[in-house]
Image (cartoon, rainbow over all chains, first blue to last red; front, side, top):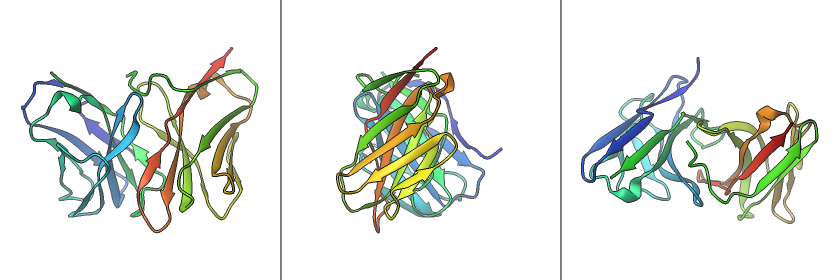
Length: 113
Length: 112
């Protein structure tokens, strides 16, 4: 089944404790992206990648890192999480190098205490 | 979870009626528009897209209309069903770019 898989689904952590949210797609997609979704603010892009070893900042990249060592994986790294990073996170991918027809994962609900 | 959005505009529609969801986009240079559906506890799901050289595109039970003069996009759902209850987002991509910008979303509630 074609899908974007994020893990974990839920995560509670404390301020400053490094964490990684994994994202993997099995559709051989070129483009991958991370979004955060907050009430009243909608979906905002954190980082995106148009190909392996190519990543770029989205609208809200501060406090986040990403890597794209393999085509299928695009982990989101929070080196020192803070409470304002409490949010619902989505990974997405698309076939081409544009963010058209995105396939989204099921989301990761992160709480930073 | 219920983080999709508080204070979203809400459209209540009777089961079987047609729904129309509206979206005003911001950039006249946008050349590609998409509608996504997000059900509670799930990620957004692609519904239909349209390019700026078109005014209308139809899918299965859905139609997207694009009015470039007033920068307005709408999604029409025919014979709305309970499974259509969700939050609907429009999104746009600027021409020659790759920045996807989402609208704020509209919640659709289908009454039996």
